[in-house]
Image (tube, rainbow, N blue to C red):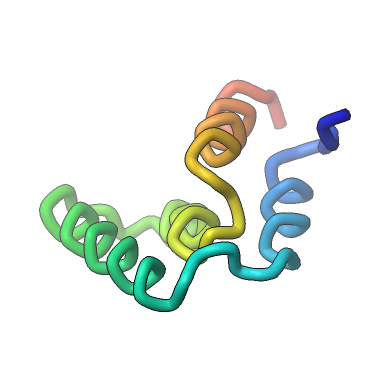
Amino acid sequence: MEQTYANANEWRDSAMSRADCVSQQESETRQKAADLHNRDNGVTDPDTLLDQQLYILGKMDISEYQRYLLFKHTTPG
């Protein structure tokens, strides 16, 4: 059964306490891609940058990361 969370912060905090699930090389590749995207699109919001670390560090796979973002941006409060 999948874990449920009261809010996005609880989910993010729980995920950040997990072990990294990608190699250092993969993490660096993801970080470079995110840096390029952020620079090209003017992304500077600290909360967005923190969310990106969930995927960059492999704390969430892409499927969970997408569910997290949907939950975060559609749940009131």
